Length: 187
Length: 417
View (cartoon, rainbow over the protein chains, first blue to last red):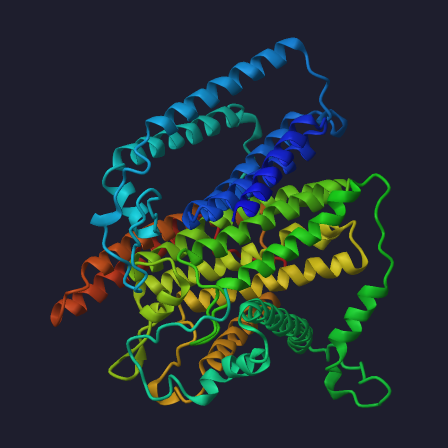
């Protein structure tokens, strides 16, 4: 089990590191996707099936496309995907952003009620796979996640949904600004 | 991780444990019984993988042949019929054709453009094929035949299928060909557009069955109404609508005609496959057919009762035979659609997904919620329940269809005779 964890960790970190060091943006993006796969593998290793598959579905299926499209659509030519070497300003802003995100994540993990969550109040699945009471690792069956999302965290879910919708609408508004010119005649 | 024995569903009949039903398991146990215990599960899993690869490899080979023969029949020509069995003069309608095709694609020259990104150009077909094979792991092929039992099996299936977009992008970008890149962008637009109705179409099933496990979804569809109508989800109003949406989206997801715009050969040469030759090209085709077979298998699992027999009197036929029969029927449907429908235009394609399929799928989700809330209705209320559900399916379909086709359809072809 530990060997698998080490393998997964080395894979994830190595792909992420190589993605950072490569100059070709498309290669970096693809390696970043490989790194997301590593994270999904880690979730599987930790027994969180649902999160692992959701990670693959969302990140590898959708977010990767956004990243690749962004890279392709914001470059003027193919040679432009090879970005120039770092400047000091870019390095500083990267470090600041990274530290900020890392700090927020660590604070969230430390403040979370992980390990204190008891699965006792959740009914077992109809198929007979009962929820095994592990003390420190809360078992997260799909049903339990669904119930949690729809009851305790319903407000958060709604807020995130609204946020994403607003982002989507904003993107549409930005993209459709030159509407009168590009509007094509109806057949 | 091997062919797990599922707890038999509620309706246990005398055939559920017959010899034929357990034949694959018995054969496997007979083959691995001489092994020491710690090795057995490993060899068992390897055996299931080998069986899946060989069965679906052969199925792929013969689906291509069937497709060519049926397309030929529909277009009034014989199709491939001249490949003999080697060293004989026996032709058998060209039954050896897939193997000849395989040898041909293996011995062809593999051309890689000088400007291409060699590694990605090589990796794209490999990634595509690997992920399309992964999807076969969670489909229940028979009462006792599930390669991997997963709590979130349906999610696993669609997560593994999501990586096809990545492979298409890799192929299009790495080829360094403008047609390839254009086609890859088209393909991505299409795949992303139809991913949404595809996912929304199976959510009602999960809602009503109350589980994401494929075996439990199949178990939830066991039994018959009045010993005649099976409890398959396709025989409910929301299930029928969901099945239709699912199959249309599956057509688009597997790049099949009439949604084969990414490789529209009259506009884009061969789309993202333009710079591929030899066996890599064959791998792309293999992955496309595997994807089609896997999506059909998932449609059977979700809507067509999985391996269940359509009638209690037909249960003596083993479950895996039923599964394969349904699979063949769906694949023939795919071929038939390819032969009879013209290709869509790009704007029609995306408009169809976003303005028609997605709203209908969302309404269908509400319909399924109503269906599961009205589960306890009985007597005349049962008729009301069906009536409301049918109305919720048909009403939006008619209204939305009329609204979207206003001013466009029906078309009058004045000069085409």
